[in-house]
Length: 63
Image 1 (cartoon, rainbow, N blue to C red):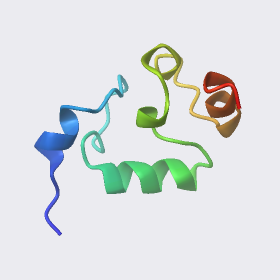
Image 2 (image 1 turned 45 degrees about the vertical axis):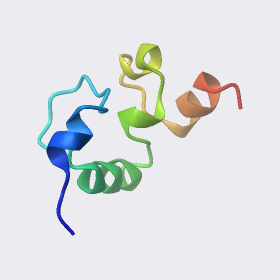
Image 3 (image 1 turned 90 degrees about the horizontal axis):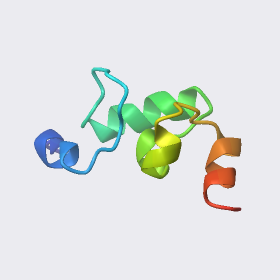
């Protein structure tokens, strides 16, 4: 499967500089291995805190 990095970057809200930006499969795998979620799972205001925990996700979406 061909990576659609340029297309993905148009919708990526991550403000942290890293080499996985736009390469969603690598980003998701990395964050799940760290027991957290990637930036795209969070509203922009919450993403800027860099708290990617499941707890922060639940709080952000009032779950």
